[in-house]
Every structure is written in C-alpha cells, then in structure tokens.
Length: 356
Picture 1: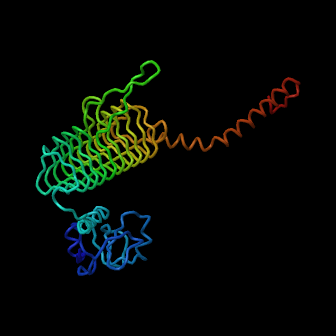
Picture 2 (picture 1 turned 60 degrees about the vertical axis):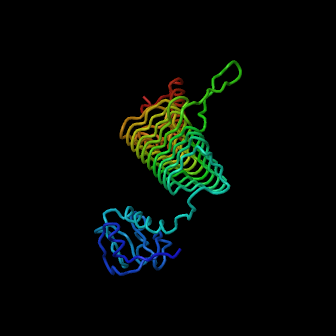
Picture 3 (picture 1 turned 180 degrees about the vertical axis):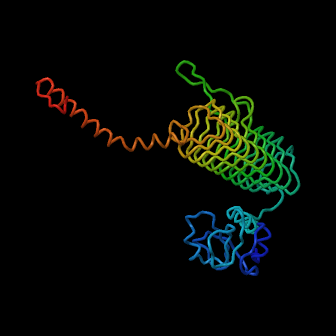
C-alpha cells in the first residue's frame, strides 16, 4: 500500500491547531522526538524532552500554545499529546491488517451461527452453535468462540483468543492475542482433606469500546456476571476474577490482579502489579500506584500506594522513615549505652553534676 502524504496545514485541521511556520511542509510519518527523521512529525508534551526540540531531525512538531521556542514548523494546540494521538491515528489506518471477508475454508463454523455483513473468520477458528457475530468484526487465526457467545459490531479478535460459552462482547471491542474471556473462576470448597470444585455457571459481559491486552484473563461469574464496563482498557497479563465489576473508563496496567467480587468504580487507574483482596469496593477515580497491595475498600478520589496500600501522602512518609531505620538503630544503641553507663555511675555514687 502506498503511503499517503499530508501537508502540515491538513494535519492542523485534523487536530484543531494553528500552524506556526510553513503550512505546506510535507509529512510522511510520525515518530518520537529523539528518533524522528526528515518527513516525520513529532510532539512535545513532557518538559523532560524539551532539550531535544533543538536537535530533532523531524520536519515538524506538535507543541503547546505559548510553549518553548522551536526552529521547525509547528502545530500549536492545547494538548500536544492528544494532538499527536489524532495524527498517529491517520497513519495507523494506512497500516491496518488486510483481511479477507467471509469464512476461511479451514474454519469450523456451526450452521446455527449468525454472521453479520463483512465479517471475517480466519484460518483454523472454531465458532460454536448459537454464537452471533456482528457486522465488520474480524476474528483472526485460531480464535475459539464458544456456544451462545454474542460479539458486537466492528470488533477485533486477534489470534488465539478464547471466548467461552455464553459470554457477551459489545461493539468496537479489541481483544489481543492469547486472552481468555470466560474461563472458570478459582472456586473450590474444602471437603475433608480435598478441594471440591465449585461449578462456575455465570458469564462475562464486556461492554462497548473495551480493550483487553495479550494473555489477560477475565473469569466468568460463579453465578451472575463478571463485567468490564464501557471504555475500560486492560493491559497485558491482567487477571480479573469471578464476579468482579470494572467501572467505566478504568485503566488496569500490566500484571494487575483483581480478586473475586471486587467492585471498581468509574475512572479507576491501577498501575503495574497492583493486587486487590476479594470482596472490597474501590471508589470512583481512585489511583493506585505500582505494586500497591489493596487490603480494604477505598473511598472516591483517593490516591494510594504501598503495601498495605495507604493514602499516598502517608505512604510516602512511612517509606521515608524506613530509609532512616539504620541511622535510628545506631542512635538507639548509642542512647542505650549512655543510659547503661549512667546507671553504673549512679550505683557507684559517682554521678557528676551534669548527670544529675
């Protein structure tokens, strides 16, 4: 496919910005400020990268209005990063994976499956009876779609994704390779010295505009529903247990683990390797720092960190104190020694005026 070229003025219209410099500058690609080359457009939103404005080889830059001076043509916007994302989207469309509409000859599709217009079902996929697949959805190589699964419109189901029986996938959902939706929840009851499996008869509902990263897992409810609400984004290697609710527009970074029956509010952000015990509530707009261990419910609009997770301001103070422990231990030993010497002097009747 031939790469389309854009003039800087065209890109300014796309991002709603103002051109500062030559609006006829030709742009053929996008890149970060350090690796950009001639023909690329880059951006500056983080002050850490300001020094590279003067050394970048990019042909143009997206920058903040009234920001740092730049020697190359620019598009001035309120939010340079968002502007860059919009431009990146234009070039991404030119590199979309080509696919053939219809069912590949090696795919196993039950006659009872409902398939919408312009659907693509790739090689070696299996789609079981009662499944429904909406228009323009693509299921790539090796996908497994269980009985009575519903998949909405314009979804991307990448290679080797498993969606088990009865699960519901909304519109414009993206599921990356190796992810599993609807696996059994981790439920066992102790029966003497053995563990007896608790049947997992619920389902998973993935609402519209959700993205699920590679090798992540979303377990079905024991009964009822595990739900990932509209607009949420899940990174790679994330575990969402049975009967969890992830609120709208939440973001879970890599290796987050959510135990059973946890309810996350809207706009929650969990950084890498955050873990939650089960049966708690995480409020709206809560932010959890990397490797936080959440052991109890958290109210709205709170930022936490550490283990056990505490309000971030307090956690920083506690962490700061731990770095002083060696110094404090040394000081305690010195004080203990002085007290011991003082007690000996008092016992011998040799205390000085200063000791008294």
